[in-house]
Length: 125
Image 1: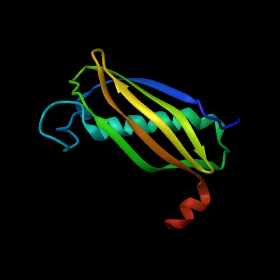
Image 2 (image 1 turned 45 degrees about the vertical axis):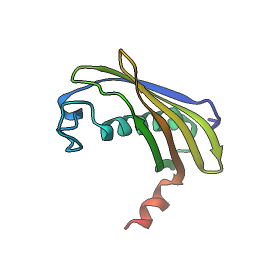
Image 3 (image 1 turned 120 degrees about the horizontal axis):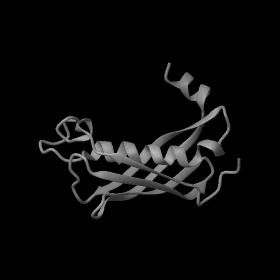
Image 4 (image 1 turned 90 degrees about the horizontal axis):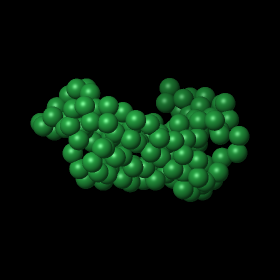
């Protein structure tokens, strides 16, 4: 259960109506929305380390830097990947990317922080 650089996860997603900019009100054209790309990237970061942190721990997002550089339409197959590149105490930095059948559509960095689940939730009550 060691947390170490190089941990990774990848997922394939098919772009559905609910993933489009119009559905998420982040644009007015029927293409994959940036908020959905970000959510998929964050999900990949969590999956990469899920089995490598304690049961009482989780991670929370701290920083997201994503460049969404190419559009993808309804039905496109998207591969989203995350690679843990840096561990600085409780702070974890991941390189993330998303590709469709034709090209890279997004790339960037996601930083998450390991927290004790119950103590974290007590702070928001």
